Image (tube, rainbow, N blue to C red; front, side, top):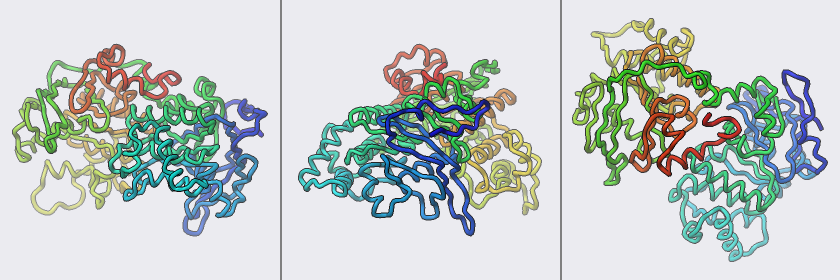
Amino acid sequence: MSVAFETDSPATESPAVQSVALPVLTVADLEVGYRVRDRLVPAVHGVSFEVPAGQVLALVGESGSGKSTTAHAVLGLLPANGSVTGGTITFRGQVLTELSAKGWRSVRGRAISLIPQDPTVSLDPVRRVGHQVEDVLRLHTDLDTEARRQRVHELFELVGFTDTERRYRQYPHELSGGMRQRVLIAAAVAAEPELIIADEPTSALDATVQKQVLDLLDEVRKRTGTSVVLVTHDLGVAADRSDLIGVLYQGRLVEFGPTAQLVAAPRHAYTRRLLDSVPSRRPWVRDRPPVAVTNETVIDVEQLRKDYGGVPAVDDISFRVRRGETFSIVGESGSGKSTTARVLTGLTEADSGRVQLLGTDITRLGRREFRPLRRDVQIVYQNPYSSFDPRFGVYDVVDEPLRSFEPRRGIRRGRPNRDRVVAALEAAALPADFVDRHPRELSGGQRQRVAIARALVVEPKVIVLDEPISALDVSVAAQILDLLRGLQQDRGLTYLFISHDLAVVRAISDRVAVMRQGRIVEQGTVDQVFSSPTDDYTVRLLDAIAGRDLIGGLS
C-alpha cells in the first residue's frame, strides 16, 4: 500500500509502508463526515497509513486538521452526527468499519484502548479511581472480584504509584492532574490491548508532569509491546516520542514517514510551516534585533508575599523590570506566577512586601486609588473568550477600556471611538471590518488578537501577558509571538510574560525568573538561565522541554 503525499516533489513510498510484517492497524482511503442540518460536511479525505507492531505513530496537525476525528473513527467513537463514509479500517486483519455495536464492545477496551485528553471529564467524580479501573477488567476478563482488585494494585504499581491501596480508594479530585492521567493509562493497559490511541494525553499538563507521563507511557509500551497512535499538536512531543509521523492538514494526510527523516527534511510546505512555527526557529530569535531597553525601572517588587488560607502562594519574592524589556516568570501550575501577576495589576492585594509600579507604591492602594494606573498597565489573559462580555461584539470589547477611562457625559450615541478601535485592531493585525463582527465568529487566534487590541487601545506602558498562547495551535501561537515582538519594537512596550512553556520563554524574553512553590529559585538573563542554570529545579524544567534535540527547542 502506498501513501499519497501532497508535496513539492514526486511522492515516494514510505519505508514504514514497505514493512513485510503484518501491521497492527491499516487505514485505507478513510473518509469521514459530519451531518450538519441537511448536509454532510466532509472532515477526513482519503487518509491512508499503517501502524507497525510495537511502534508509535504520531498524528500531528492544528485544530480542525482531522487528527482526532481519524483517531475516533479507529475506535468507533465518532459522535452521533459523524460517520465513516468511505474507506476501511483494519485491525489485525479484522475490518473494523464493518463491526456492529456488539462487535465493537469486544474490540474497544480489550484490543484497542483509549487514553483521552482530559482526565477531569473522563473520570467519574463520585467513584473511587480503583473501582473505575476495575470496570475494564470486569468487562473484558474473567477475573473474580479479589483477582480484579489485585490486578488494579499491580497496574497502579506499573504506572508508578507507591501506596496503591491509598490510590485505589481515592476519588479523582484528591489526585493531581498527572496522577489522574496515570489512572487513565492504567485503565488503558488493563486488558493488555495491542493498540492504544492516546488523544492529546498531556496537553493539559505542565512540562515536567508531561515528561513523567510520556516516560511512563513509553515504559509501559516497551514492556507490553503495545503499538500507539499518539494524537498531538505538539511537534516537540511527536519528535521525541514517535517512530513515525503523519501530518494532517484540512482533513488530508499530506506527509508521512519516519520521524527523524520527516523532521530533518520535510517535503510538504505545511510541514515546513509547522516546523518553522517552533519558537526557537522564529526569525527574530535567530537574528534577535536590539530592543530599546532603558535603565528606568517600571516594576520594582521587594519581598512580596501573598497567602491563601495561611498557605503562601507567593513567598518573599523580589525582582525588577526595566522599561522596554520582556521579563518572564516561568513555573508549573501552583508556582505563584499568576498570583504575582494579579497583585501587579491590582486584582489581588499583597499581604506584605512592596510593589512599585511606574514609580507608585501600589501595595496599600485600594481599588479606587489604583484606578488611574490601570490605563498604563493592561493585561492579556490565557483564554480571551472568557474575558469578553458575552453580550459584546468586537467593537464593544475593544472600546470598553476607552469608555471606562474616558467617560462621556450624557447618553453615548453611535460609535464615537470607532477610529481608535479600528486603529487598535489594525495594530493587532486584524482588518478594519472586524469592528462589526462578534467574538463567537472568530478563531482562537483572532480572539487573542482582539484581546491584544483591547489592551493596546488605551496606549499602555506595561502589558501583563498571562499564558497568552498556551491555548493556541503552534502556527497561530507563532503569529501572536511575532505580533507581540513587533508591537514592542514599535511602541517601546514593557512585557511581564507569564508562562509554563520554557521554549516560548526562551524565544521572547530578555530576563527570566523561575518560580517554584511561591518562591523565585533563579533569575537572570535568558542566556544565563538557559545555558548555565544553577538550581536543580530549573535543570529539571529545561530537561522536560519536548523536542529540544530534533527541532531545536533551545537553539
